[in-house]
Length: 79
Image (cartoon, rainbow, N blue to C red; front, side, top):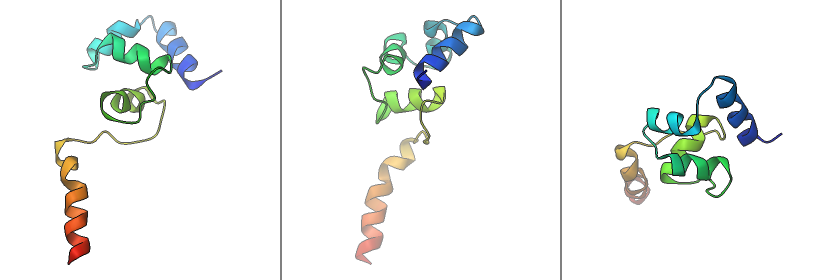
């Protein structure tokens, strides 16, 4: 059984719909559905945040300050 199937079963076991979970976590039901069905791989942006929150992948959810990290690293490399 895939991790996505396990997540869907766990939601079902607790009586939580995918849409309810999505809204409670600030995501669109369609985006959550896309991640759970494999249409979105969860590598970047919103789909990444969903995959991490659902436990489908290890990772961190970057805040706005993380967007400047590559630039800071490039500046440090020049020094």
